[in-house]
Each structure stands twice: as structure tokens, then as C-alpha cells.
Length: 511
Image (cartoon, rainbow, N blue to C red):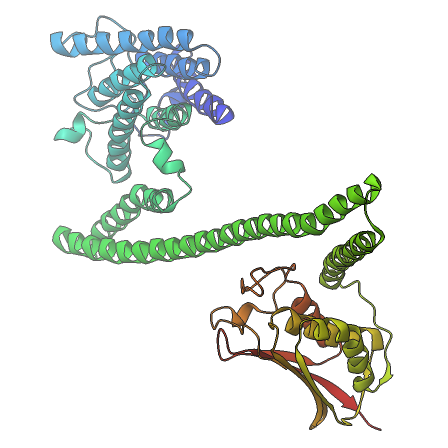
């Protein structure tokens, strides 16, 4: 049962209100029957009904059956009172002292007519709560409306002897007890009726929680101001009504704006949560894609090495064939090692764990070393290499990392340039920077992929010699290393089939 502590507290309030009346009646303590002085008194029968209703609600937490039995006691009080008003007899039940106020329409020894109806609603709520919580809520809310009307009438000084107010007088103890019982029943049936809407964490629940306190409290404030003004002679009834209308409209407008602001803030929060969830889902998909890519690309050279190793183990190969197998194993082992090194370097860069050993470096030396490393592969593919390494200045950097930058750009150019193509490498001075350009006549870069070309694990899908290989890490490593050296790297292409050009700019130092 949700809100059990609050339910018990509400039950205790109802029992206390009834017990005060019983004690006041038994010991003839007038101050306990009429609180405050001059307010309608609490009849003994009503006091017994409040104690029974409070005890019944307290049983809702542990013993719904006992709650229903006590609810029948409250129902019996309603029936007795109804029969009394129908027959005009009080049945000789205990009456209040003659100097205790009560409505002119209230028979001696019986609850007031409106209290009688409220007890009937309370009895229905208690009996129906276990199986029909929505009916219980409806009945209890009706009882609350009756008590609320009586409370406003007493607050505004309604007559106890004239008009309908003579039949709607209700003791303050009964009003407080019914309010507590209503709260307890609503929390005891939190999964039904209006409570899911009230407790909703979305816009609907927010609007209800914002509006309800104003809807309940506004009539009290405005009605009190109107009555006080009329009593003081500041205005008559009609002008007081106009003031109430204006004040109600103003407060309703303020409340509407307040709710709108709250809804906007909630929408913004939900939007941020949605964005965060979308980012998390996107990251999850990227991780899955990366894992799939790693599995696929690492499997290929591993399978080749495994197959070639079986041939070597069989011992049936000629010397020439053995040499070919060894070369194949060596190439795929280097390829596998390169994949692992690239993945480890990207992880290290992402975590800020890569340390540089800066020296004054002529970048042309690093570029020459990279060209030497790729010379055989360039010749093997029949690619024309044009290099123009003009003196362009000294940079402060890690020689090995600068060579890695040049090597990765050359690797990318060789990978995506078909036989008979051309690769151009040059270094020039560019203001306070040394500019390294690696351009090719290869497959080019699609316009929609160009913004993502330096992101890790992103591959354009361009095919060279019928296949595409690699983890998509080479250019990501280039960007990270260049940025660590305080430089920048850009890529350009006129589109698919028109080659690509990569330009690295590293800050130079004084000679």
C-alpha cells in the first residue's frame, strides 16, 4: 500500500477529532465540543462516526476486511441519522449542551444534514475501497466538497438560522477529519482514479499539481477579502463581486503563465534527456559497429596466417612455394600488427596518454623516411611518385610522430590509388607554418563523407582493386598527432573519381 505512513497519519487525525468530541460530551467540556468558541458543536454520534472512520482507514494498510466492517459502522450512523430526519425523531441519542451552537436545521443528537450525507459517502468509500478504488475516491471527494462548502460558509460568517446555511453547518472537527480522511483514501488508492494523473511526472501531472492548490485556496482568499471589505463598508455586494471577478481573472492568468513556464522547463528537460538518450544509443551503435569492424578486419589476416601455417606444417611445399607462403605470412602478420598498433594508439590518444619527445626537426627528413618505407609498395602498384621537398623551415616536434603523420598520409594515398595513378608529395613554407601536401589521383572522397574523413573507424566504402580494407584509423591518428604538435590538417576532393589532397600545417620555429 503506497503512502502507508501518510495514511496512518490521516487516520490518526480523524480518530483524534472524534475522540475530542467524545471526551467533551462525556465530561461536559464545552471547549472540546465547539472549537473555536461559537462554531457549530460536534454531536456525540458524529464523534463516534469519525473515530470509526479513522480506525477503518488505519486498517486499510494491514486488514482491508476490518476496514470494511468499521465502514459498515459508519454506514449505520448514516442510516440512523437519515431515519431520524425522515421521521423527525432523534431517537433519544445524546444531545449537545444548549449553549453550544448548531444549525437551525440540525435535529438534537443527530449529525447535521450535510454531515449525515458526508458520513454516507465516507461509508461507501471505506466499504468499496478494496475492490472498487475509483468509486471510493469519487465518494470521498464528494464528502470533501461538502466539508469544504461548510468550511467556507463558517469562514465567511454564514447564518446558522436562515436559508440553506442553516442545514450545512458542520463542526470544525468534522471538517478537519473529512479532509484528512480524503487525503488518506486518495493515497490508499494511488494506482486508480485521479491519482495516477496527479502523480504523473509529465506535463499533465505538473499542470494538475500546480493548479489544484490554487483552485482550493483561491476561493478562501478572495471570499475572505470580499467579506472583510463589505463588513468594513469599503464596498457593497455588487462591487465586491466585481473585485472577485477581476482578482480571479488576474490570478488565473498568473497561474496560466506559471504553468506554461513550468511546462516549457519540463519540455526542455525532457528534450535534454531525449538528446542524452539518443547520444547514448548512438554511442552504443557505434561501439557495436566498431566491434564488428575490428572482428572482420582482424579475422582476414589471421585466417590467412592460419591457412598458410597449415601448408608449412604439411611439409609438402617446394622451396619456391615455401618462400611465397612465408612472404604471405609476413605481409599479413605486419598487417595484423598494424591494425593492433593503430587501435592502441587511438585509445592512447583519446585518453591523453600519448607523450611526445619534442626536438627541432626538419620535416623533410621525416617525409623522406616515410617515402622510403612505402617506395616498394608504390613501385609494386605502378604508381608514379612526384616529390618536391623544398627547404621550408624547422618545426618543434617528435620525429617519430611526424614520420607517422607522413606515413599514414602516404598509406592512405597508396591504398586508394589504382595502378597507373599518381601521388604528389611536397613541402613548402606557408607564413609561420611548414606545409606538407600529399595528393593523389585515386578514387576521391564523396562530398557527404568529407566532413567525417578524420573520425576514427569511419571508412568511405570506396573500392580499390575490388575491395576496401583497414580500420579507418590512419587519418584519425594523423589529426590527433598534428593537433598535438599545434598544427592543423585538412582534406579536399572534387568528388568520387577525382582524387584527394591532404594538407598538414605545422608551426615553424626560428632558425
